[in-house]
Image (tube, one colour):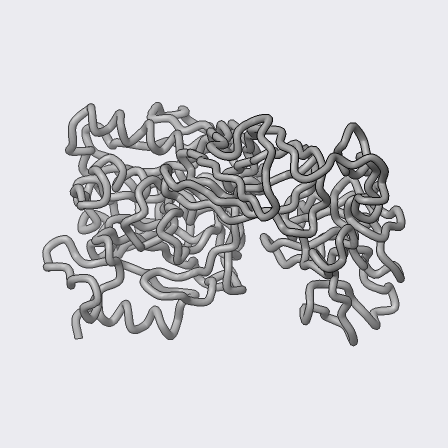
Length: 497
């Protein structure tokens, strides 16, 4: 058995202490689907879990600097012991060099144009977060993450992987002053991406490992081993963990939200521009027949996360978006929507909830004269059936979500339906005082009341209670009972225009 094969075999048994590595520089890589093949795109990256019990390297919070080091003239590092990675003293525990020895990483071997393109891509990938990406050394004593982009894996040595990093600070948490390695001189262009893109997404992946993020089984995220999806961004959605197959997450659970994890570690950066949306049919001012549909296009460089259709200020239709920038969308109205004048808003959002809207006004059937022809709770205004703007705050009683500012009406453990909010679980959830997100860390949930202090019960998603019983938090929509009955947790806060 080769050394690499031994490492891969051990990784299945001892994932807490072993490296995940790709093909060696001096050996032909197995083809996609062949035994030993881990990366269909030909890009190999990995992380190493520090020994169990290693304390996190966080003393003052996480630095907001990522220094991409091209190692001009060569970089010198000292092999440390124990699991200690420190950019301030140039120490790393990664690789197989003897402890205390000096490791030399050769300088970036590609052109300045390729370097500039790679840096622009890395900055773009990290732009939604509160971090500065620079290729200028911050200077002595300045905390920073160091992303080495130079050399080859054989220089560390690490068995020839295209990149490697510690996985967090030993407890699956973001760590500070960590050194990650992306071996630029072993990279080549592949059919689905340029050389600069390949190196960019290796750096993004390896540096993200140092913030405690695992691999993901989704080709649109930099944490993937899968190629063929074009531009990659850290995604604001729950993604299954895994490399060339779905695997349990190294830090627990089965999914990971890379955007949520990085936002928690680094804060918020630049909000991306919203999609460009256009309604092609019907035309503004048209008279439409029953069963009509709305045709629209939406374009976003991150890909479109979702398309919504609002009628007189309320969302009635939602469909998932796609990464294809040219795909048209067809939004068919439910037949139960009351006739009358309709302001149709098509709203397109990317995965970070940056949204844009286009409106046309049409008439179907007779404009309303009274609320008698409108849906439950609606009023008639200038021929339009509509709900009044919601006023219910978190904790107020409700019978349907249209009454809540958050558009979420749920049983949160207080003995009835109340207005609440959507949230992602974690220690820094967005819930108001007195409430806590009932979703697991990084997972969607609603702001719920704390568990009973007596310890008998807990509130959570279906089947997730930790006490003797668990309350399922379901949002209730009573606007048109036959149209929308009981619906699961909503993922956005407000669906008004």
